[in-house]
Length: 290
Image 1 (spheres, rainbow, N blue to C red):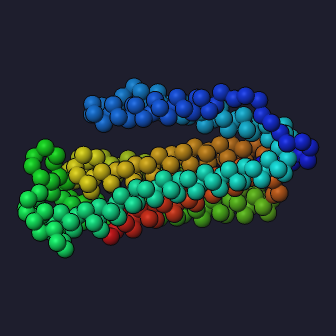
Image 2: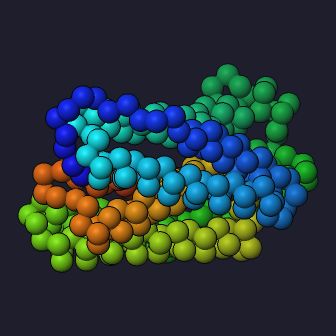
């Protein structure tokens, strides 16, 4: 972390933040479900987002105060590194489940419904008019309206890809500046990274508006719409969390909390941001492009 103390292993005081986190996530999920069913933004969803913001800044503040107070030694620093690695691994598994659902639908379910292999009878009985092609732009019956058009890779998705790749470059530049003791380049690099993260989120909102209003692509428009919004939506949530963490790191950079030798708080957020960028590359290739 920011300071190093070679004393005994620090044991923190009992904390309210895990409980706040549980309430925040539960409230957010309830609000998201209510919003999807009602079609209008639920107060629970707004409250959930506010609680998450309170959680992030509050918990970060506690850890920062403990670090600046000299409570963390090398063993604690090692524990933080292991914890961050396992956290990112759990996030990899989280997205792997959704990518797995996408690949299963494209590789097995869609061809099966189209009568591939020995499933001609299944095709005739379940959905005779179905054409096995991805993305799926037709639904049986009129209960769920199919999307009119698929979301292309060019345009906003390509711009967002360039934005995230550029943000990784600016963040890496800031990291090198920190290790070299160049505060000016560190701050410029962090400001650019935060602005790029915010720009990505703004364009993501624009893309969703375009999908709903012009393409007829919604969360309930079939397997294509479901996988599209689950993958891009959860990624957008992670970008939001990452941008929030980058803002915290930017403030700490302005305050001079990090040194060339002790800056794991910076490194942890950089790891997370690069992970989010890699996930987006997978999304761009398999959701938008192929």
